Image (cartoon, rainbow, N blue to C red; front, side, top):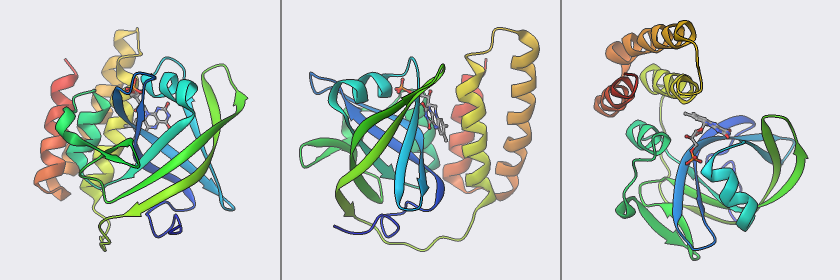
Length: 194
Ligand SMILES: Cc1cc2nc3c(=O)[nH]c(=O)nc-3n(C[C@H](O)[C@H](O)[C@H](O)COP(=O)(O)O)c2cc1C
């Protein structure tokens, strides 16, 4: 099995798109962070998500490594089409990802807001080995997407306004540093904040 660094997962937190499926085999995708420390991999899955419900049912998850900003944002808002998915060893993955890592998930802790799973890889496919320089526009889209995922959870108008202002700061970075994909992703994100 290829090592997971080669597949794009590094020490610290790697932002990926998790694909999972329901008991009936319906696929789902959403961004998550994979925590890596001393060769151990974990994920915190927040209560209420489809990803958590699927992992609780099947105990499996695929990490799709990609730098596609639009794919990140579309998966955050549940806007992927069935044509975005393909299958790797029978499990749903994203056709556009650079690598796929299939994990078995074992529940190791329950917290008020999230469940913590230990991840054990059982299959890896590296599909696109590329070298990328850091792009501040892509990083800004990811930061803004994290804020956007919290936006809907806020009740207070003041908190919503604060998050919006932070997202607009990131939009300025995307405008200056991003490419076409980052700019499109930011547009989708801003449209969501009405
Ligand atoms: C970059 C990024 C990282 C995220 N990391 C996590 C995570 O580690 N765990 C989690 O539960 N949610 C995480 N989220 C939020 C989920 O993606 C979000 O709640 C999503 O709507 C869940 O979708 P689902 O109901 O289809 O699973 C992250 C969001 C972004 C944009």
